[in-house]
Length: 566
Ligand code: G1P
Ligand code: ZN
Image 1 (cartoon, rainbow, N blue to C red):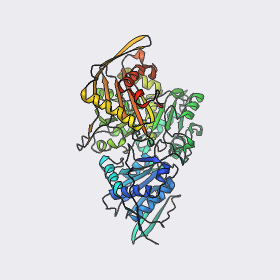
Image 2 (cartoon, rainbow, N blue to C red):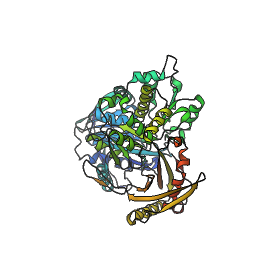
Image 3 (cartoon, rainbow, N blue to C red):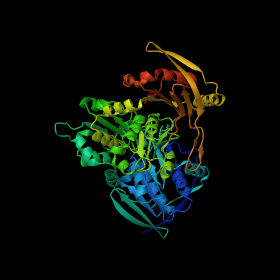
Image 4 (cartoon, protein in one colour):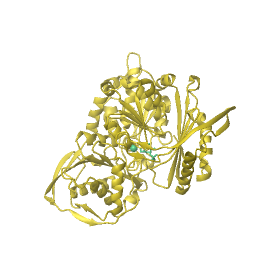
């Protein structure tokens, strides 16, 4: 059957700028007439107008409005001359699985319908993210090109009659303006599971979950937080690794994530934490809506800092078959991520790269063979097996280490700290603050960097009956130069380094959808083992006070307390 394409008139929307990870807005914004079509057209037009023979992958986290947008994407791909769309069943495919599919099928890129850990539902957020041919999130130059196009768009192309059922695995051929167009509906879970089996030793993980010879099995608990990873968890942990069904909760993807934030942290993953405490579980993991984040927990929900996860995986990489075959080339971390991994790299002679916040900065480094393992403090860790962070991969990596070393999470961490010392780390989020005030605060911090007015300033506090003094050693605005192509990104946050190597970082979030969110990152280093078990918040309290004093955050944004501490 022949389908006809139409060119429709539109007018630009001037707010279609990518954030840290794709375009994220409230669903109601995407529901405006032509808003979604404009953005999709600009993604397609950014591919240099040469779409003949192009294959694109389409996935998403299953959130509200995703099915409708998936339909629009297919109709617009058809009208724009794309040759083939590979789409996950019902347009549901985790972010890591999309990255893998792009690479496996040699696609030219992919579109991911997700707002990651942001709330879902009709009153929640929606998002569209574009990944390039290497499977990585579009880098800045690609994102800027799309943004420029959104400012001038006057028409888009669509094939409105082309209805494609994407419920079942199938291959469908259409003729569109006398050109063939194919939609292949795949089961993305199968591909991903096969890949994970090549990366990890499932047999050894299975022994951990079914220990015998007097060893009880490790009790673990996993939550998909009602997001996209449910089917992956079922296939991998319940079917392949034969864990009991009671080990997995919230594994039915829903459009609104049960009205909660699908964000794996100690505040939002409360069901997992409660269940782990009740069942005295030894290991836990929770994933965000699109499956690229993972929070790892030890016995009775003992919190593992994501920065430590990166350091521990780096130090224990040889227990993971993938890294046994491909020795770690280098490690990347985002600038605010704690420098725990730096210590491992230093000791092991591994190159360490620091990049701005956002996974898109790791793609080039991985392609150039400079790094094979990367992480962010925001619960994202992953390797060059794909070009996205990967939540399930993190859980399997931790389990591989526990299985090989026959230790608990806490034991692994303590042995790690005994070798390298402990970097205490926390992040304070001040969500949805007045934008002008936040900008003013950042401008003032930047001025301090330029003038050096804070250097040598001392701050003293009484803490637990002792006087703690911090002296500012350096204060800088963080700019980054990509070592693979010399591209420079400026103004990626303000770092304040103390003479004792403690560090404070301020930056503004670029994933929020209302007003402005300030992120304040606090880190200190401890080498005395008798101090390793201290409470992170207690340890970092004086440094938090220094950060608040220097930035005058309370005065600027009028908030006494953060919205969220992670
Ligand atoms: C946040 C995190 C960042 C992560 C991004 C996408 O971005 O801080 O590490 O890459 O979400 O998951 P932000 O809101 O800080 O710009
Ligand atoms: Zn995510």
